[in-house]
Image (cartoon, rainbow, N blue to C red; front, side):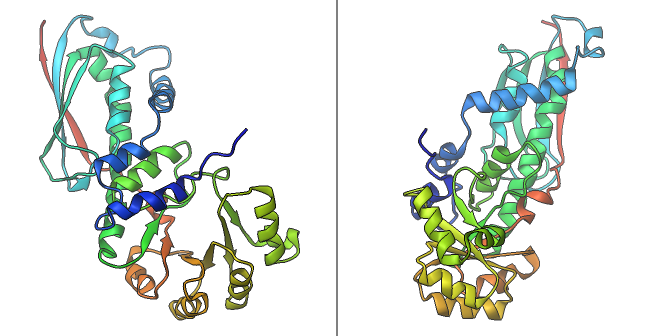
Length: 311
């Protein structure tokens, strides 16, 4: 079985066309959106979790009563998650219609209409919570990512996400990060090599670990984590394509940039938050990976308003 092309490294080619606001162009988001089958499977599981053996409250309503609904935002945000929102309703009722007034990646303002829905009242009420859960959490992720992207706008540095995502929402949150203007790191353990301390110990040295990675996965880029300037020198000498600088101070990061001298791509990581992001960016590193993008998400306040009518 062939190894999947690393998502992170595919993005290196894509980013050149939209560096002014990375990965917010519709074509870029379409590239990152999971396949419909994956979205449907994820949403189907979420619906089953909520509905179980049946929505006993909705069953009290007339089966053929129709309604219209509107979804609005109550706070400023960046929209993300339309595909999952749509799937929640359409998996339940494929006759239900949704008309969007805002796009993924778009900044939205309080009171703004996001979409209109029309369909069976039972379907609207049963799928409402699941659909809004996706839209609120993913928009929250995109909004947080947007704040980070804006903080370094104009600087030659990229903000990367990590694997510190909410359980079960890896693909979803990484898509939302892109909606907010930041970049994806590896999707998981399968699509890029990142050598850490224990891997180095097992291999015997930094050079041996890098060579073993190359021998095992020919053509796959290799990144290695280092904890000191001496380890950085070893990684550069061994020809590492990327080096992750773990918990380096700003002064050490500047020294690392001087040592690497453009021979390898440098990524700063470790407890980085919005508060000191610009200080890290000013050191000259190429990338900054931020776990806070996906692990500290606040759901966006959205509301769905119903208008019931007979049909």
